[in-house]
Length: 417
View (tube, rainbow, N blue to C red):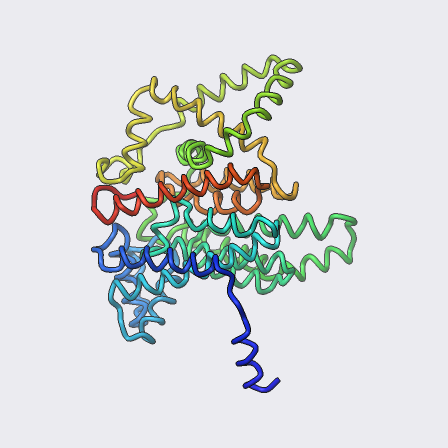
Protein backbone atom coordinates (compact mmCIF):
# COMPACT_ATOMS: atom_id res chain seq x y z
CA UNK A 1 0.00 0.00 0.00
CA UNK A 2 1.35 3.43 -0.96
CA UNK A 3 1.88 6.05 1.74
CA UNK A 4 -0.76 8.29 0.13
CA UNK A 5 -3.25 5.42 0.30
CA UNK A 6 -2.52 5.01 4.02
CA UNK A 7 -3.18 8.73 4.56
CA UNK A 8 -6.51 8.44 2.75
CA UNK A 9 -7.42 5.43 4.89
CA UNK A 10 -6.64 7.36 8.08
CA UNK A 11 -8.79 10.28 6.89
CA UNK A 12 -11.74 7.92 6.45
CA UNK A 13 -11.67 6.89 10.12
CA UNK A 14 -14.70 8.31 11.89
CA UNK A 15 -14.73 8.58 15.65
CA UNK A 16 -18.08 8.07 17.43
CA UNK A 17 -19.52 11.13 19.22
CA UNK A 18 -18.84 9.71 22.70
CA UNK A 19 -15.07 9.92 22.05
CA UNK A 20 -15.37 13.69 21.66
CA UNK A 21 -17.44 13.87 24.86
CA UNK A 22 -14.66 12.08 26.73
CA UNK A 23 -12.09 14.36 25.12
CA UNK A 24 -14.12 17.39 26.21
CA UNK A 25 -14.43 16.09 29.78
CA UNK A 26 -10.71 15.42 30.08
CA UNK A 27 -9.82 18.77 28.49
CA UNK A 28 -12.07 20.53 31.01
CA UNK A 29 -10.54 18.62 33.92
CA UNK A 30 -7.03 19.50 32.75
CA UNK A 31 -8.02 23.15 32.26
CA UNK A 32 -9.12 23.50 35.90
CA UNK A 33 -6.11 21.65 37.37
CA UNK A 34 -3.17 22.47 35.07
CA UNK A 35 -1.87 25.56 36.91
CA UNK A 36 -2.76 24.60 40.47
CA UNK A 37 0.05 24.13 43.03
CA UNK A 38 1.51 20.71 43.78
CA UNK A 39 -0.90 18.10 45.10
CA UNK A 40 0.74 15.99 47.82
CA UNK A 41 2.96 13.39 46.05
CA UNK A 42 3.39 15.42 42.87
CA UNK A 43 6.41 17.18 44.34
CA UNK A 44 8.56 14.04 44.93
CA UNK A 45 7.34 12.58 41.62
CA UNK A 46 8.47 15.72 39.80
CA UNK A 47 11.85 15.56 41.52
CA UNK A 48 12.34 11.97 40.37
CA UNK A 49 11.20 12.83 36.82
CA UNK A 50 13.81 15.58 36.66
CA UNK A 51 16.52 13.13 37.74
CA UNK A 52 15.37 10.62 35.13
CA UNK A 53 15.44 13.36 32.48
CA UNK A 54 19.07 13.96 33.47
CA UNK A 55 19.78 10.18 33.44
CA UNK A 56 20.72 10.40 37.09
CA UNK A 57 20.53 6.79 38.29
CA UNK A 58 22.57 7.19 41.47
CA UNK A 59 21.58 5.45 44.71
CA UNK A 60 20.37 8.70 46.26
CA UNK A 61 17.88 9.10 43.41
CA UNK A 62 15.82 6.17 44.63
CA UNK A 63 15.84 6.99 48.34
CA UNK A 64 12.59 8.97 48.01
CA UNK A 65 10.83 6.39 45.83
CA UNK A 66 8.70 3.45 46.85
CA UNK A 67 8.28 2.14 43.30
CA UNK A 68 10.47 1.48 40.28
CA UNK A 69 10.83 4.74 38.31
CA UNK A 70 9.49 3.56 34.93
CA UNK A 71 6.72 6.20 34.91
CA UNK A 72 9.25 8.85 35.83
CA UNK A 73 11.66 7.69 33.14
CA UNK A 74 8.94 7.83 30.46
CA UNK A 75 7.87 11.34 31.48
CA UNK A 76 11.50 12.40 31.81
CA UNK A 77 12.26 11.26 28.26
CA UNK A 78 9.11 12.92 26.92
CA UNK A 79 10.03 16.14 28.73
CA UNK A 80 13.31 16.15 26.82
CA UNK A 81 11.29 15.94 23.59
CA UNK A 82 8.87 18.72 24.59
CA UNK A 83 11.65 20.81 26.12
CA UNK A 84 9.66 21.48 29.29
CA UNK A 85 9.80 20.05 32.79
CA UNK A 86 7.12 22.33 34.19
CA UNK A 87 4.39 20.87 36.35
CA UNK A 88 1.75 21.97 33.83
CA UNK A 89 3.45 20.25 30.88
CA UNK A 90 3.93 17.02 32.86
CA UNK A 91 0.27 17.12 33.88
CA UNK A 92 -0.62 17.47 30.22
CA UNK A 93 1.43 14.38 29.32
CA UNK A 94 -0.22 12.44 32.16
CA UNK A 95 -3.64 13.54 30.89
CA UNK A 96 -2.79 12.23 27.42
CA UNK A 97 -1.87 8.83 28.87
CA UNK A 98 -5.10 8.89 30.90
CA UNK A 99 -7.16 9.59 27.77
CA UNK A 100 -5.63 6.54 26.11
CA UNK A 101 -6.44 4.46 29.20
CA UNK A 102 -10.13 5.35 28.69
CA UNK A 103 -9.95 4.22 25.06
CA UNK A 104 -8.23 0.95 26.00
CA UNK A 105 -10.86 0.35 28.69
CA UNK A 106 -13.52 0.75 26.00
CA UNK A 107 -11.78 -1.79 23.74
CA UNK A 108 -11.69 -4.34 26.57
CA UNK A 109 -15.31 -3.66 27.52
CA UNK A 110 -16.18 -4.25 23.87
CA UNK A 111 -14.30 -7.56 23.95
CA UNK A 112 -16.27 -8.68 27.00
CA UNK A 113 -19.75 -7.25 26.44
CA UNK A 114 -19.98 -5.18 23.27
CA UNK A 115 -23.47 -3.70 23.66
CA UNK A 116 -22.71 -1.98 26.98
CA UNK A 117 -19.11 -0.94 26.29
CA UNK A 118 -19.82 2.80 26.02
CA UNK A 119 -21.86 2.85 29.24
CA UNK A 120 -19.09 1.07 31.13
CA UNK A 121 -16.51 3.43 29.64
CA UNK A 122 -18.29 6.45 31.12
CA UNK A 123 -18.39 4.68 34.49
CA UNK A 124 -14.63 4.22 34.21
CA UNK A 125 -14.12 7.83 33.15
CA UNK A 126 -15.98 9.22 36.18
CA UNK A 127 -14.86 6.65 38.76
CA UNK A 128 -14.55 9.01 41.76
CA UNK A 129 -11.36 7.60 43.28
CA UNK A 130 -9.67 7.76 39.87
CA UNK A 131 -10.96 10.86 38.07
CA UNK A 132 -8.72 13.52 39.64
CA UNK A 133 -5.60 11.37 39.12
CA UNK A 134 -6.16 11.48 35.36
CA UNK A 135 -4.71 15.00 35.45
CA UNK A 136 -2.01 14.76 38.09
CA UNK A 137 1.62 13.69 38.04
CA UNK A 138 0.86 10.41 39.82
CA UNK A 139 1.66 6.89 38.69
CA UNK A 140 -1.89 5.56 39.08
CA UNK A 141 -3.56 6.39 35.74
CA UNK A 142 -0.40 5.45 33.83
CA UNK A 143 -0.22 2.16 35.74
CA UNK A 144 -3.87 1.47 34.88
CA UNK A 145 -3.14 2.08 31.19
CA UNK A 146 -0.38 -0.55 31.26
CA UNK A 147 -2.48 -3.12 33.16
CA UNK A 148 -5.37 -2.57 30.75
CA UNK A 149 -3.09 -2.94 27.73
CA UNK A 150 -1.71 -6.16 29.19
CA UNK A 151 -5.24 -7.50 29.71
CA UNK A 152 -6.36 -6.36 26.25
CA UNK A 153 -3.57 -8.28 24.52
CA UNK A 154 -4.18 -11.25 26.84
CA UNK A 155 -7.74 -11.41 25.49
CA UNK A 156 -6.33 -11.18 21.96
CA UNK A 157 -4.07 -14.17 22.81
CA UNK A 158 -0.99 -12.08 22.06
CA UNK A 159 0.67 -13.30 25.21
CA UNK A 160 4.19 -11.98 24.60
CA UNK A 161 2.88 -8.45 24.06
CA UNK A 162 0.62 -8.85 27.10
CA UNK A 163 3.62 -9.90 29.19
CA UNK A 164 5.67 -6.94 27.95
CA UNK A 165 3.04 -4.44 29.07
CA UNK A 166 2.71 -6.44 32.27
CA UNK A 167 6.44 -5.95 32.87
CA UNK A 168 6.08 -2.21 32.30
CA UNK A 169 3.18 -2.14 34.78
CA UNK A 170 5.28 -3.85 37.49
CA UNK A 171 8.10 -1.40 36.81
CA UNK A 172 5.54 1.33 37.48
CA UNK A 173 3.87 -0.12 40.57
CA UNK A 174 5.19 -3.33 42.15
CA UNK A 175 1.80 -4.53 43.40
CA UNK A 176 0.74 -5.03 39.77
CA UNK A 177 2.52 -8.38 40.01
CA UNK A 178 -0.69 -9.62 41.68
CA UNK A 179 -2.74 -8.84 38.56
CA UNK A 180 -0.18 -10.58 36.34
CA UNK A 181 -0.69 -13.67 38.51
CA UNK A 182 -4.42 -13.34 37.84
CA UNK A 183 -3.73 -13.11 34.10
CA UNK A 184 -1.63 -16.28 34.24
CA UNK A 185 -4.46 -18.06 36.07
CA UNK A 186 -6.80 -17.06 33.23
CA UNK A 187 -4.27 -18.49 30.77
CA UNK A 188 -4.09 -21.74 32.75
CA UNK A 189 -7.88 -22.07 32.89
CA UNK A 190 -8.12 -21.47 29.16
CA UNK A 191 -5.17 -23.64 28.13
CA UNK A 192 -6.12 -26.67 30.22
CA UNK A 193 -9.88 -26.31 29.89
CA UNK A 194 -10.35 -29.39 27.73
CA UNK A 195 -7.28 -31.52 28.41
CA UNK A 196 -4.05 -31.65 30.39
CA UNK A 197 -1.20 -33.26 28.48
CA UNK A 198 2.35 -32.68 27.36
CA UNK A 199 1.31 -30.69 24.31
CA UNK A 200 -0.92 -28.31 26.27
CA UNK A 201 1.79 -27.89 28.91
CA UNK A 202 4.41 -26.97 26.30
CA UNK A 203 2.00 -24.49 24.73
CA UNK A 204 1.25 -22.91 28.09
CA UNK A 205 4.95 -22.58 28.98
CA UNK A 206 5.57 -20.95 25.61
CA UNK A 207 2.63 -18.56 25.98
CA UNK A 208 3.48 -17.67 29.57
CA UNK A 209 7.25 -17.39 29.07
CA UNK A 210 7.39 -13.62 29.55
CA UNK A 211 5.18 -13.81 32.65
CA UNK A 212 7.32 -16.59 34.13
CA UNK A 213 10.47 -14.51 33.62
CA UNK A 214 8.76 -11.54 35.29
CA UNK A 215 7.81 -13.65 38.32
CA UNK A 216 11.34 -15.04 38.55
CA UNK A 217 12.92 -11.59 38.30
CA UNK A 218 10.47 -10.13 40.80
CA UNK A 219 11.16 -12.96 43.25
CA UNK A 220 14.90 -12.32 43.02
CA UNK A 221 14.28 -8.60 43.59
CA UNK A 222 12.14 -9.22 46.71
CA UNK A 223 14.75 -11.58 48.20
CA UNK A 224 17.74 -9.30 47.50
CA UNK A 225 15.84 -6.15 48.46
CA UNK A 226 14.23 -7.79 51.50
CA UNK A 227 10.84 -6.38 50.56
CA UNK A 228 8.58 -5.15 47.78
CA UNK A 229 9.42 -1.44 47.90
CA UNK A 230 12.69 0.36 47.29
CA UNK A 231 15.02 0.93 50.20
CA UNK A 232 13.97 4.49 50.97
CA UNK A 233 10.38 3.54 51.83
CA UNK A 234 10.66 0.13 53.52
CA UNK A 235 9.69 1.37 56.96
CA UNK A 236 6.59 3.13 55.61
CA UNK A 237 5.52 0.21 53.40
CA UNK A 238 6.64 -3.00 55.13
CA UNK A 239 5.73 -6.43 53.82
CA UNK A 240 2.96 -7.38 56.25
CA UNK A 241 -0.71 -8.33 56.46
CA UNK A 242 -3.38 -5.75 57.37
CA UNK A 243 -7.16 -5.72 56.86
CA UNK A 244 -8.19 -2.07 57.11
CA UNK A 245 -7.97 -1.52 53.35
CA UNK A 246 -10.32 -4.45 52.83
CA UNK A 247 -12.97 -2.94 55.08
CA UNK A 248 -12.71 0.55 53.58
CA UNK A 249 -12.84 -0.95 50.09
CA UNK A 250 -16.08 -2.71 50.98
CA UNK A 251 -17.53 0.51 52.40
CA UNK A 252 -16.56 2.37 49.22
CA UNK A 253 -18.13 -0.41 47.17
CA UNK A 254 -21.38 0.04 49.07
CA UNK A 255 -21.41 3.81 48.47
CA UNK A 256 -20.07 3.99 44.91
CA UNK A 257 -22.26 1.20 43.58
CA UNK A 258 -25.34 2.00 45.68
CA UNK A 259 -27.81 1.63 42.76
CA UNK A 260 -26.37 -1.78 41.94
CA UNK A 261 -26.37 -2.82 45.60
CA UNK A 262 -30.01 -1.80 45.97
CA UNK A 263 -30.91 -3.68 42.77
CA UNK A 264 -29.17 -6.76 44.22
CA UNK A 265 -31.28 -6.70 47.40
CA UNK A 266 -34.06 -9.10 46.23
CA UNK A 267 -31.45 -11.67 45.25
CA UNK A 268 -29.49 -11.17 48.48
CA UNK A 269 -32.68 -11.58 50.51
CA UNK A 270 -33.74 -14.71 48.64
CA UNK A 271 -30.33 -16.38 48.90
CA UNK A 272 -29.90 -15.40 52.57
CA UNK A 273 -33.28 -16.88 53.55
CA UNK A 274 -32.47 -20.11 51.73
CA UNK A 275 -29.07 -20.40 53.42
CA UNK A 276 -30.43 -19.63 56.92
CA UNK A 277 -33.13 -22.26 56.53
CA UNK A 278 -30.68 -24.95 55.48
CA UNK A 279 -27.74 -23.84 57.67
CA UNK A 280 -28.96 -21.82 60.69
CA UNK A 281 -25.54 -22.27 62.29
CA UNK A 282 -24.20 -19.73 59.75
CA UNK A 283 -24.90 -17.00 62.33
CA UNK A 284 -21.86 -18.19 64.33
CA UNK A 285 -19.22 -17.60 61.61
CA UNK A 286 -20.91 -14.25 60.89
CA UNK A 287 -20.56 -13.38 64.57
CA UNK A 288 -16.91 -14.45 64.54
CA UNK A 289 -16.32 -12.28 61.44
CA UNK A 290 -17.91 -9.31 63.24
CA UNK A 291 -15.57 -9.76 66.23
CA UNK A 292 -12.61 -10.10 63.86
CA UNK A 293 -13.71 -6.90 62.08
CA UNK A 294 -13.88 -4.95 65.35
CA UNK A 295 -10.33 -5.89 66.27
CA UNK A 296 -8.80 -5.90 62.76
CA UNK A 297 -10.17 -2.58 61.52
CA UNK A 298 -7.60 -0.25 63.01
CA UNK A 299 -5.80 2.81 61.76
CA UNK A 300 -2.21 2.92 62.97
CA UNK A 301 -0.18 3.98 59.94
CA UNK A 302 1.48 7.38 60.52
CA UNK A 303 0.18 8.77 57.21
CA UNK A 304 -3.40 7.92 58.25
CA UNK A 305 -3.06 9.68 61.60
CA UNK A 306 -1.78 13.09 60.50
CA UNK A 307 -3.49 15.86 58.51
CA UNK A 308 -6.87 14.30 59.26
CA UNK A 309 -8.73 17.49 58.33
CA UNK A 310 -7.13 17.64 54.87
CA UNK A 311 -7.18 14.01 53.77
CA UNK A 312 -10.75 12.85 53.20
CA UNK A 313 -9.78 9.20 53.69
CA UNK A 314 -8.21 9.97 57.08
CA UNK A 315 -11.29 11.93 58.13
CA UNK A 316 -13.52 8.97 57.23
CA UNK A 317 -11.22 6.49 58.97
CA UNK A 318 -11.01 8.60 62.13
CA UNK A 319 -14.79 8.81 62.30
CA UNK A 320 -15.40 5.09 61.71
CA UNK A 321 -12.77 3.89 64.18
CA UNK A 322 -13.53 6.59 66.74
CA UNK A 323 -15.52 4.15 68.85
CA UNK A 324 -16.70 0.56 68.81
CA UNK A 325 -20.26 1.87 68.38
CA UNK A 326 -19.55 3.70 65.11
CA UNK A 327 -17.40 0.82 63.94
CA UNK A 328 -20.26 -1.58 64.65
CA UNK A 329 -22.68 0.62 62.71
CA UNK A 330 -20.45 0.62 59.61
CA UNK A 331 -20.24 -3.16 59.76
CA UNK A 332 -23.76 -3.19 58.25
CA UNK A 333 -22.88 -1.63 54.86
CA UNK A 334 -19.53 -3.44 54.82
CA UNK A 335 -21.14 -6.84 55.31
CA UNK A 336 -23.88 -5.95 52.83
CA UNK A 337 -21.18 -5.23 50.24
CA UNK A 338 -19.82 -8.74 50.72
CA UNK A 339 -23.28 -10.16 50.07
CA UNK A 340 -23.80 -7.89 47.05
CA UNK A 341 -20.44 -8.86 45.55
CA UNK A 342 -21.31 -12.52 46.13
CA UNK A 343 -24.53 -12.28 44.09
CA UNK A 344 -23.22 -9.89 41.42
CA UNK A 345 -23.18 -11.58 38.04
CA UNK A 346 -20.05 -11.57 35.89
CA UNK A 347 -19.97 -12.08 32.14
CA UNK A 348 -17.80 -15.18 32.54
CA UNK A 349 -17.62 -17.51 35.54
CA UNK A 350 -13.84 -17.51 35.28
CA UNK A 351 -13.82 -13.83 36.24
CA UNK A 352 -14.94 -14.70 39.78
CA UNK A 353 -11.35 -15.73 40.41
CA UNK A 354 -10.56 -12.02 40.65
CA UNK A 355 -11.93 -11.95 44.21
CA UNK A 356 -9.04 -13.75 45.97
CA UNK A 357 -6.55 -11.58 44.08
CA UNK A 358 -8.41 -8.46 45.22
CA UNK A 359 -8.23 -9.80 48.79
CA UNK A 360 -4.48 -10.38 48.53
CA UNK A 361 -3.91 -6.96 46.98
CA UNK A 362 -5.86 -5.13 49.70
CA UNK A 363 -4.30 -6.97 52.63
CA UNK A 364 -0.67 -6.32 51.70
CA UNK A 365 -0.79 -2.61 52.54
CA UNK A 366 -0.42 -1.06 55.97
CA UNK A 367 -1.26 2.43 54.68
CA UNK A 368 -5.01 2.77 54.07
CA UNK A 369 -5.26 4.44 50.68
CA UNK A 370 -8.22 4.42 48.21
CA UNK A 371 -5.86 4.39 45.23
CA UNK A 372 -5.11 0.76 46.07
CA UNK A 373 -8.72 0.00 45.09
CA UNK A 374 -8.41 1.31 41.54
CA UNK A 375 -7.56 -1.93 39.75
CA UNK A 376 -10.15 -3.96 41.73
CA UNK A 377 -12.92 -1.48 40.90
CA UNK A 378 -11.84 -1.21 37.25
CA UNK A 379 -11.96 -4.99 36.81
CA UNK A 380 -15.28 -5.10 38.62
CA UNK A 381 -16.65 -2.58 36.10
CA UNK A 382 -15.32 -4.67 33.22
CA UNK A 383 -16.48 -8.06 34.47
CA UNK A 384 -19.93 -7.39 35.90
CA UNK A 385 -23.05 -7.93 33.83
CA UNK A 386 -24.97 -4.78 33.20
CA UNK A 387 -28.15 -4.16 35.14
CA UNK A 388 -30.96 -1.99 33.80
CA UNK A 389 -30.22 1.30 32.07
CA UNK A 390 -31.69 3.07 35.11
CA UNK A 391 -29.25 1.39 37.52
CA UNK A 392 -26.21 1.99 35.31
CA UNK A 393 -27.27 5.55 34.50
CA UNK A 394 -27.75 6.38 38.19
CA UNK A 395 -24.29 4.98 38.87
CA UNK A 396 -22.79 7.32 36.28
CA UNK A 397 -24.63 10.30 37.82
CA UNK A 398 -23.36 9.38 41.31
CA UNK A 399 -19.83 8.99 39.93
CA UNK A 400 -20.03 12.40 38.19
CA UNK A 401 -21.26 14.17 41.33
CA UNK A 402 -18.62 12.60 43.57
CA UNK A 403 -15.82 13.20 41.04
CA UNK A 404 -16.82 16.85 40.66
CA UNK A 405 -16.93 17.24 44.45
CA UNK A 406 -13.49 15.67 44.90
CA UNK A 407 -11.97 17.89 42.19
CA UNK A 408 -13.61 20.96 43.76
CA UNK A 409 -12.25 20.02 47.18
CA UNK A 410 -8.75 19.57 45.76
CA UNK A 411 -8.50 22.74 43.65
CA UNK A 412 -10.03 24.85 46.46
CA UNK A 413 -7.50 23.25 48.84
CA UNK A 414 -10.26 22.20 51.23
CA UNK A 415 -9.44 18.48 51.14
CA UNK A 416 -7.75 15.79 49.09
CA UNK A 417 -8.82 12.18 48.61
